[in-house]
Length: 182
Image (cartoon, rainbow, N blue to C red):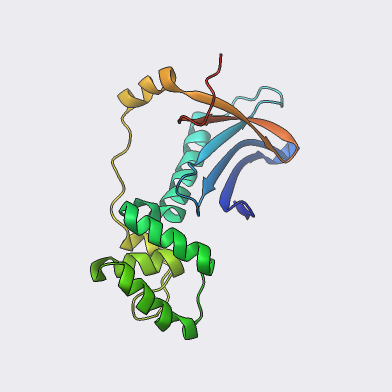
């Protein structure tokens, strides 16, 4: 797993023996409009990957989505506030700045939402102490998509191609931005 300047975490499933990235998951953690994607290396030779390995990899991706995008589960107005604070302060404020920023945030969000907004924006509690457990302050995760719903995804799926580090990967996405594969 690594982060790059495009404000996303990249998780790779690599074949170590050949230094080949088989699957790449991109998890944007700053822009709520960007959805996570999974890319598959289509330029290499065919390789059977055991289901249990793919499932394990996707569990890692899901965990990363849960933690780095937890703040995006807040109400839309709060997501907007957090996004603005993360952009303005780049996710970090000093102890000296904290109380001024806290006063500003208190004017923008209800007191009940303050812990989640501060944790998501700066990894801090309202008393100024730091916290690594941002997920605990977020609302519960929405229920998972059922297998029935996923089977209908095929009829609405979109495929796009992403250039990544000199190689082409197929990217499965769902959304209007992608072009339908003819």
